[in-house]
Image 1 (cartoon, rainbow, N blue to C red):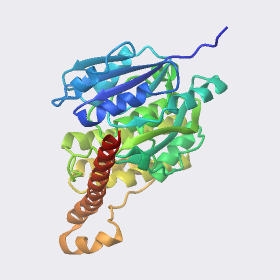
Image 2 (image 1 turned 135 degrees about the vertical axis):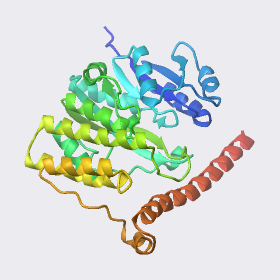
Image 3 (image 1 turned 45 degrees about the vertical axis):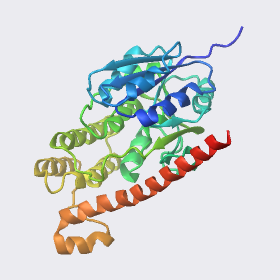
Length: 342
């Protein structure tokens, strides 16, 4: 009797990603794992994203649309339509290596434990995935749930959304996406997945590609609502860790997380700064005023902390924009040359 190949649902929320969405869907359809369904939810795009998605609609690709409600709502909609035994989340401008799902499913079969959460290596690129840079972080290893939080909190490390493969059982145990206005909605969601897991298994050859070309402007200014939601996401993650282990080391890690993210609220959101300081005190720690890197300290001396903080946020993004535009030009050149030679 042939062994059963579980269906994997690739879930793609899409909003105004027309230039990238076709390649993303193609990367899902190109998986060497034989059982894959693709579900695209267009979240009220105002560009041609829906038209691009509909070109792929068929027996393996389901496309639906809804009024704009944000990425978490679109992800929940994709999940409600999914039939797979495993869930592959995929952002609409990212890519999967053809063997990504197959590599993780091979490990899933060997482990035979649906509560193990599967992670993988991800690389960053602008326009040419062949130039993606894979930079290992301390999370790129097998981890028990507590160690995952400790590394994430103390080393400021993360996994990109596409890196995970999650069983249906674990997905249902974690519950839906809930942080609708937070810039860290994926961080909070996967923290809940980790809490419900039997641990994280890292699959090095399960590669995905995180596109960083789709940037909107250079400002890191967040709305009042987004700042508040971001703080609440971090506070939730702290509660998740303490529910797993409330100890000196976990409390210290929580304080370090608050210190790391204090700059997002300081000094304009005095209410959130006060909340963070009070929470740190409850955990047995103290938060210090954020400081900018040494190369931006002259700006702080001359113009104050806020100007220095803006400069420290904007300058790296301006440099990235130059590199991005160069990569875009090279992408267009190589694509044109390939088209001319065919």
